[in-house]
Amino acid sequence: MAQPKNRLYLRGKTYWYQRYIPKDLRRLLKKKYGTVTLIQRSLKTRDYDEAIIKAKAFDLQVEIEFKAAERQIRPKTIDTLYERELTKPEFKRRIIAEAILQIKNVGKSTTDTIQNLNADDLIYNAIQNVRDDDHPVLPTQNLIDEIRPLLIKDLIRAFGSEMKAGTDPIRAMYLEKAAENFIRRESETPIEKHVTVKQAIHQFLEHYSKRQYAFALYILERTFGDRAIHGIKRTDIRTVEKILYGLPKNWSRAKEFKNKTPQQIADHVEEHNRKETQIAYQMLKHDSVQKYIGKWVTFFNFCVAEEMMDRNPSLNIKKKPVGSDKTNFGLDALISFFNDFNPFKENGWGWIPLISLYHGTRGNEVAGLKFRDVFRDDDGIWVIDLKETKTDSEYKKGRRFPIHPKLIDWGFTKRIDERRSDSNAMIFEGVYRTDQNNFYEGDVQHMMDKWLIEANIKDDRHTYHSFRHTFAFFARKSKMVADPDWKTIGGWSLGKDASTGYGDAIPPVDLLESLQHLEFGIENLINPDTNLETKE
Image (tube, rainbow, N blue to C red; front, side, top):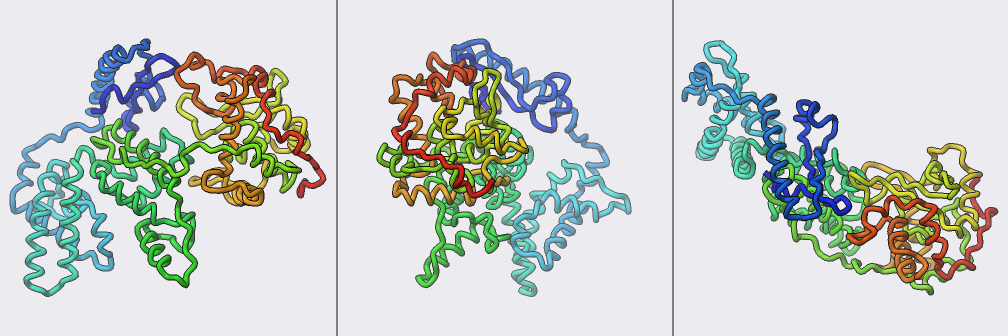
């Protein structure tokens, strides 16, 4: 059972308790907790030690309710006289013989199929094919549990007999592989915790953003398949980390890698890159790999909290990213980039870096804007209303901030009004989104990189994201811009200072008081010309 301290969190300055309701119990607990998936309760204290004591009491109460609900849907199997009769040695031998015969008759299947065989399913099917005096047999879990270790023992004995006879080495290999598979699964997963990696990922994505975690979890699912989550060890995470470093960019979308596992792709790429005559694949960057590992930490923390596994196997594996030092563009770099800059160029994509620079927004946040996200609020202030951001949580969704007056002067809002025909349409044409990426992809990202290269300001430490760091750097230096204001606009955490708790409530009209004072020394370089816009 997870410790109550793992279910504590701060909301403002007050400690709260939270715990997920297992999906199969929600219907039974609906009367108690409603339709929510997460139990939340204020512990009404700012003291950590007091919060732990209160959390323990409440957690015990919740645990009792969960156990009571579990008994309603998973009653203990009654060990009847009839069932005890069916566990006689001769009957169990018939079931085991049927299961072994099924393994021998795998036929065209490969050893990969053998590796995925589930002992419980195999025994269940064998019981269905065995009758006791022509009476069907009830395949209870008690009976399956009793037969499973005997099946493994007989598989090893049958393998030895096949090898001695030497009549069918292929069938012998099937028996050996099946035995190895069942032994591994037995050692790594107690029956009561038989939750597969795929099932754990599905549960995790019910509570976390699929857009943010899909790719990182996709490689876990492709690598481990239906392995039990409880059996994933630290060595497994090290193995996947090594595979990640061997993968090329866009490997999951490349047609040449369709139906191949990450390990097979990494092996192919390694062999390809050894040949001097071949154009080498571009590999995933170190920083990208470390981001995926960071997402694994969150995923496995969830699995521990939900009692799917005892400990997080990915802790302390993540390394410091090479480009982890926050780097911003200096004035010279900004002048080089924005010299005689026209925001209407490339079908209006020129607005994208300006919005990021003057508001500290991320590339995907800007590229994902729709016409409905830019409007005048009740105070008459032009605002950008982000519906979805990287830092969204269960209690905080998106953010709204005023548009910098300079962008209004240069014609951004006028362009929005002139082109606002469908409020659900994308402001920047040519962006797209799938389950495994975000809006800042494809042609738009390539164009941003192209502009940075043309300005000679792009390197390993300076990318498009540096516009966000530049916003923070200039805002922090300005005496006219309050810290809570620029952090709220850019979506940074306010920390545990006096401003905590009210940052999200700062209205755009008040944020504008700070934002209008923020300048970057390039204001006289912007040259808006609507005639250069390639599409209307």
